[in-house]
Amino acid sequence: MAKVTGLGGIFFKARDPAALADWYAQHLGLQVEGWGGVRFDEDPARPGYTLWSPFAADTTYFAPSTQPYMLNFRVDDLDGMFAQLQAAGVATDGDIEDSEYGRFLRIMDPEGTRLELWQPPA
Image (cartoon, rainbow, N blue to C red; front, side):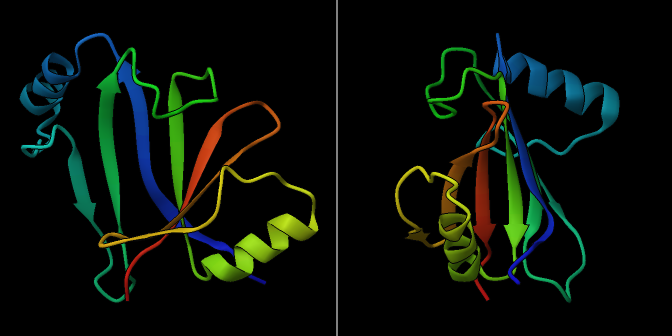
């Protein structure tokens, strides 16, 4: 069975993403990168990392969800997960997307939260 192996990222809406990122850097010591978020490298024996990233309050990236956040989960076998979801009748937001950062699939949970499933590159 394909499964989630960890949290890949927390993405959320903010009124002023840059100012919020500055606050987190100043008060909590987050090392905010030029793209506006933070990458937490974890276990070097396991592929992937975790991202923390504020988005503009008017972003449509989480659509069709109306939630102010989106969760990204790392998975071990995105093709297997896709097949499992389809067999269970879970609607996906398109097909698997391949990129330089790995492979992605987006779905909605029953509460209307957009979930991004991510298989990091090997």
